[in-house]
Image (cartoon, rainbow, N blue to C red; front, side, top):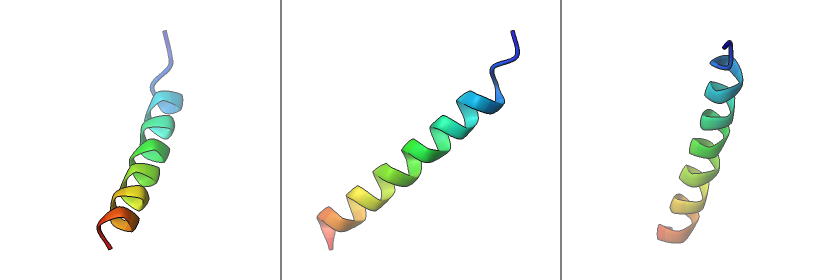
Length: 27
């Protein structure tokens, strides 16, 4: 199975969205 790039990209996007949401919530 070769699903590392897609999973990595998805995880990166989620991390970015979570970070932005967390920052907006704390700020």
